[in-house]
Image: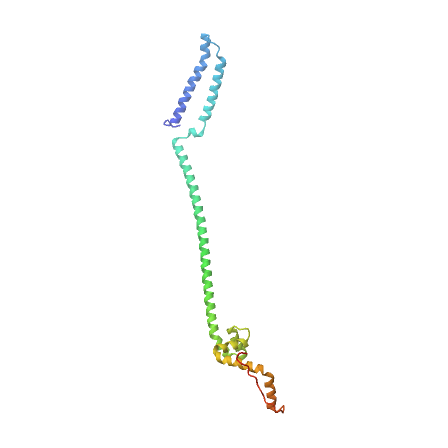
Length: 223
């Protein structure tokens, strides 16, 4: 044990004082017998027992590894403890940094996937618009090149009416409103005089011989 250690020096001084006290106590019975003092044997027995207990405890303290350590050993232990704590903190920091990096990479992947989907959607939209423009541009050419039945169906599909008749009526009304109005009026005139027109056709073809004239009723504009 180091001579410069205050704790060790204090412990040695205490042991020396205990030794002197023990010897003094052990010498008291003989001195008391010589001088015939009162009988303090029970008290002395208790005192000796207490001193023995203290001595046993002092031996246990003396046998402690901590008390036998030098200041250099104390310093080394403190440094090792500090190094262990520092290493644990570094490991915790590295773990946290790796977790943050993983989360950042996942976030980057999510953002990249979102951008990729946006680009794909925009590309699909552009392709769709281009195909629509090409289809609209080629529709008249296809309608001209294809047979009439197919062409009229294509035209009806482009106009958007329920059938080719309504599609044609709509196109004629838009192209020539006055002409379409005359067509409607003529159609109404024929519809009203359908039976008379049929009779007149028979007379004109010689199928019937009659002196009756063909009369066609023209409805007024109010009708």
